[in-house]
Length: 356
Image (cartoon, rainbow, N blue to C red):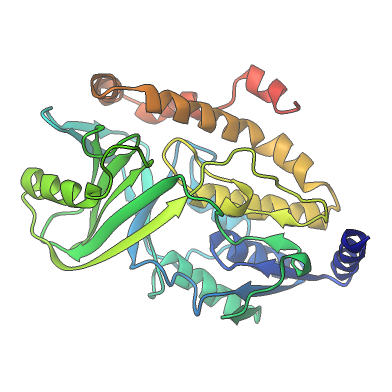
């Protein structure tokens, strides 16, 4: 009975074109901007004091082999202004303990590297600025009751994937370095990104019974040695994610879950921005067209997430020699992006199974 009352209240506010959103991460901010541009009145609730509060302008990648080959253009298509800083990289190096580094390069971009945080130029800061310029209200330091929100964008509930890293000043040239191997990053990877004298060094990993407490220190020590780098003015950061493919997308009261709150994630490498944006876009489309979000999700991106989940399971079974062999294959290809896309695109069977 109570559920029916709350559901009716949510439906009425839909009709009044007022949409409440819990959480102002990437998915929540993007959903608010799309709603506003289509004549709705979104209201955001955020328990923190500002967007991007837990990041330190650390670098993160928009990959080009997953959902979108050009994620910047996709953002423009849904009305997001490109006011944040980014740099395109066509190559990166792969490094493994006791193995020769391998350069992988492509005529097409591999990554659009951007920064996350609460400083001008950071993605979070710039999206918040766009929201405020549209006169969309963000209620900071305020939590909304779950039963009062139409869209839940509060991030992951449980942690089974982790990131630990540092940002720092360096004299290294602009570059992207990938560090693989179970000694450095169990079931994950390390990365070094340098742009204009600013660097991010981090390790993304799944927790294992063996050592993970000193995992960041081991990565730093290894990186100092192979990259011959000095670290100045460093700041530590950490975050976590959840690889939960079966997370409900709509609950019994009709609330829509987007971003990591809905399990939207690249399960292979943990890239989350594309899926945050895609889930926000599809959620708003379901509101505009009065269609089931679950059905729109199923028809558009469920198969991609299924492939991603399968790729994650495959990746976790690989030993270091097998990882190195795959790296060699990519390095010898004239179009490594196409090879990667073949592994991330749904097969005919995936497209059939999404209905079950």
